[in-house]
Image (cartoon, rainbow, N blue to C red; front, side, top):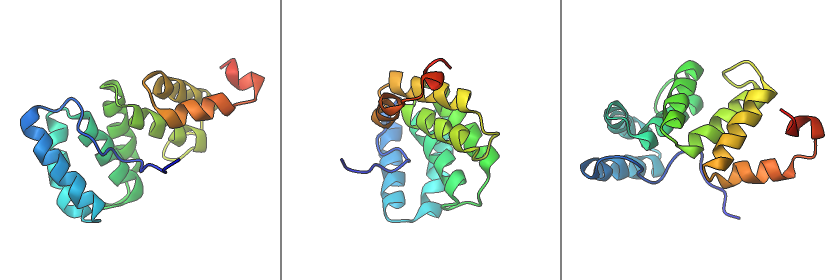
Length: 139
């Protein structure tokens, strides 16, 4: 199975005229030119583009193109999740599972994994299917 990046590579729910800009930002990200991608994603995030929101969250989480800011990362993941982006839901689950930028909370991690899975995130589906802990399934 091909390992996917935790940033979004496709345009979702953006106005058509914004998709071209989004893909330009993706090209910058693919070539590690994150400081060039950032202003484009920031512009698209103001327009409510979930893909831009999750990518900004990833940039703040990893420090690619910006200084690490876990609070901003979580905020962008939450905004993208509210718009149905399953990658941001998965990323939130991992943050809660590991206490990365938020207080560790297995219950919230499970909830976000379930939400991501329900919205088609294959990695979340795989993790949930591999859970063997009966107590975890009751959460």
